[in-house]
Length: 325
Image 1 (cartoon, rainbow, N blue to C red):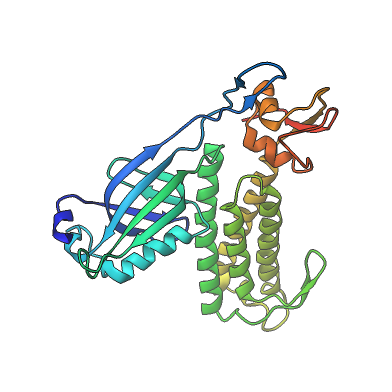
Image 2: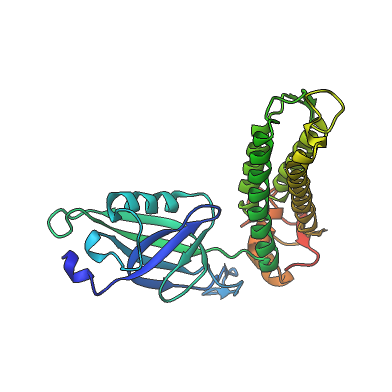
């Protein structure tokens, strides 16, 4: 059976944000879509009224095969099975947004919803097949999303370069205990790496996690500043940053600090402006979204104080975005 797939597959790849591509051979793709049509009913009237509140997130099913007999000549990677097969499943399990490249469509931003991993010892010995359902990831503010990805990539790069230079120049000893956001921390160079990773994870989180981005960006910015100031003091052993040899690491730390500040400012700017509204009759969040020309998902995100969004009591305060995207 493996030989039969040889002329029926094409090379594709998937990449979680911030990680490496994983190549695989794709057999087919089936795309599915739909509309969001919440129903409204009236007493003593048959049937219902449907409101079109937008399109459902498109999903698509992908069938992939991992077997040496179907390896693409342009794919020089490691063994298709089990190494590549396991790496593919690890990518699907990633909590980050995926970039998927298929023969029919490129640069698809999506997440893996569910998958099946099938092994057939008779027909497909030394190989396995995947049936994966992906869902497109909206990333509402596209410009902001592109900027966020570029900030994430730059922060990772600057922090890695700065830490490398600091260690090379002998500035990797524990720093003076300092206070940040209340608790006392014994900061080390490794903390810069950890704070950068925390910020990277927050930038890849859903859009309504802006406050988390701001806090973690400020934490990284303060840590970079503290490292710079610690190693540019006049204390012997803490003055290596003042030497010409320490200029490179200090510059990279300043750049990482500026990028973190940029991420914090972007998180603040992206917060929606809200106003309060009350309705005289019982409503649901989707009918309010249709009436107010709002994005239902965003309304749900800013109205978490409401216990039942499908049965909002009369005169309940509902937050509405002033300038919805």
